[in-house]
Image 1 (cartoon, protein in one colour):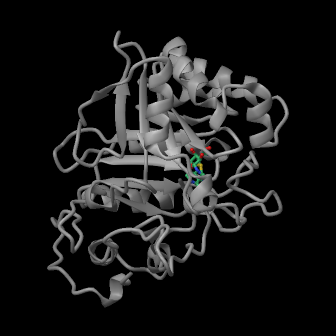
Image 2 (cartoon, rainbow, N blue to C red; image 1 turned 180 degrees about the vertical axis):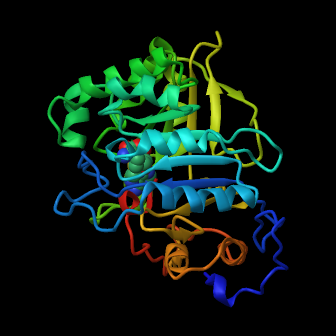
Length: 345
Ligand code: SAM
């Protein structure tokens, strides 16, 4: 995978829309605002380490995000670590809600959380201007859930958070579940019922080799086809058409249209060809792919005094060098130096 510095530079002007050398327009930015997390999910963290990277000030994230938006970013998703732990989150959302895209529209402003603190924060988040929220929840059975998070009482907290988010109008509400064979694959059918009962979109995600420890093998991944087949045995699934080319989830509903299931299959049915995303880590590094072997120190340049035009040129050039695709499961595949919790999922 080529580093941006070795890629040919595109013509850079202030009006350049972010595009990579493979012709993909990049309009989706994920920003990690902390790599601290209050959960120790067994498939993500070893539980031995805490945060490993510094956080920027809220004003600093804001300045960098504004630059990305001035280059064509239309969706911003705040993540972590656990973003609800981050002091100043509501101020950041209030400011981001004021930004306009190049088309003059408000940003699509979303957040991914484990939901532990959502019960009391759902309404303030909505009032600050957040549009949408995704809650991660890896089991609908409380003991299974708490074996995964390793936090007693976490299931009721997250369920309360989900209901508070729905009540606050942070809808449509998405629930993300990472499936691992032998850990929580018995939950598939329960999640299908949960989607209908709680009126939420449940999205199953194939497990990727991004954990702190060494758990990933091809066999632990529960593939898309198996998920569809198992749900269809209890309730037939009807495919829904994609809403946009860069949509990561294959979407399905049930014959009566109540409840939605999405399956995100980066391992067995990779969607890199339609990828529209880049990431900014909590310490201000650009990552052009989850599996990048190189990081691009945007914050370092900002701290060194580069002006907005220089930083914009750096962003444009870096994004131009975005990798064509990931290489999960191929001979010679290398895990990135950071795990998911430290990149920002
Ligand atoms: N703390 C927040 C949360 O729990 O949603 C945001 C950060 S978390 C790293 C973001 C998402 O990444 C979660 O849905 C989590 O389940 C998912 N995730 C973590 N490790 C993963 C992996 N190896 N493969 C696929 N998804 C993963």
